[in-house]
Amino acid sequence: MYIDAEIYEGPLMKKAQIMIVEDENIVAMAIKNKLESLGYSIPCTASSAEDAIRKADLFYPDLVLMDILLKGEGDGIGAGDYIRKNFNIPVIYLTAYTDEETLERAKLTHPAGYISKPFKIEDLHTNIEIALHKHEISDDS
Image 1 (cartoon, one colour):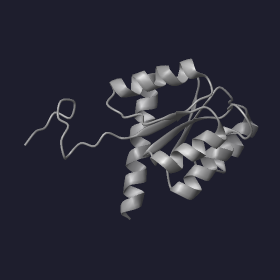
Image 2 (cartoon, rainbow, N blue to C red; image 1 turned 120 degrees about the vertical axis):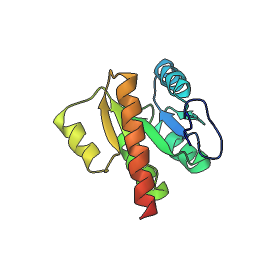
Image 3 (cartoon, rainbow, N blue to C red; image 1 turned 60 degrees about the vertical axis):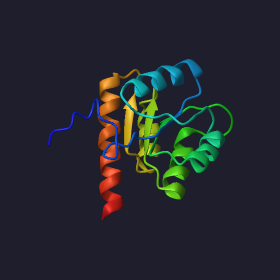
Image 4 (spheres, rainbow, N blue to C red; image 1 turned 135 degrees about the horizontal axis):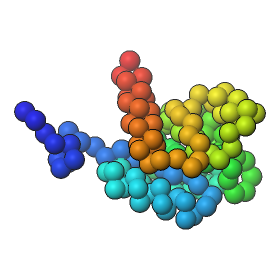
């Protein structure tokens, strides 16, 4: 039996819930709109490390898209590390910072991905799908 995944939403299809952590509201809303058009659910957004941790605990999304430079104390790398370790939620970093020091800090947190801004929505979509799949199969084993 063939089911067109784009038109069928039933017991076989669960919308992945993705939390967006981005300190620039206009950027967060643009990403949210694009992801919703691709069929993802966005239960919440956050603009600070503290808010991201609180909302990850409250909403328990399937994946977190995390900017590295955030408002307030802390940064996305620290928040991403905490979320992955304490809630077992995969994190993809989205950042304009591509310097070696930032990359090395991010790598230590075992991210599900690291995407440089600006990015194409197709690249983000591919990274999300791979991250969700890898997380799903790691939970099954």
